[in-house]
Image (cartoon, rainbow, N blue to C red; front, side, top):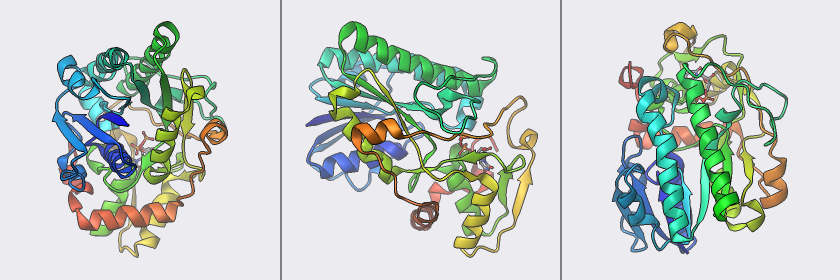
Length: 333
Ligand code: UDP
């Protein structure tokens, strides 16, 4: 297989790159290195079946340079992370909407399969017990960046679906729920690398709000094989799939577990949202996936526990502390 990966120097993209190279694919990565990093790809740079192009998904020629001649395209490039979205809303919108359109056009021209990485953010503030792919979206004002991001990813999905329906593009969509693991950087606000980094340095763990908001973290090593299987199954085209973790945990409980497991001297400090984020930011109280569809269609069965996630992120962070930046290095701090 010849595979193209946009955003392949990012956290999930680099794990996918390694996985597909190990499976025998030729892999071409396009990444503008805005949030991705060559550090993530250091293990594959010498592989003769690997090719890297530095470029932007808004640039059709750059996209063609990896997509033309490919059998399948994994579109992971996007502006992600709460901090980035809030601080640079215009670039985020352009990248996430126009960039995806460019990738869809290039994939159609290449006659390749497309896997679009979407996000649980599309469900917005829907706090139901288990979000299915058909669940309603509950979004706040489009003048608030967080909902603009959710809206943009929703448009991406609608675009992919329309390319499937009208042009016959073999496109499948995955909605990723808080995918975490080694190489995820804390630089753009993600909670797991932030808290693990703080615990390793003995700094107070910054838990935002009352800490009772919950998430279902899913481990990158569980998610990556599912991405590949979904792209391979014709029944998945024109469909969306939730891919999330199975353990719902409050951020406060998660922080306590981090401290305990890493035997950290850190305290836990509750930071009001007004202090943590720009005014008008709204958090999601709860976000729980129903993974039944992915389980039924591709056998998705995430097994990595929260304790294993914490341990693996800590090991990787000790090896390369740049992934777990000090609070003072965080974007916008
Ligand atoms: N969060 C936190 N401390 C941090 C970073 C994030 O308490 O240092 C909280 C954040 O407010 C949210 C949860 O952790 O409730 C998950 O945040 P993240 O940005 O990782 O993902 P998302 O909000 O997109 O689910």
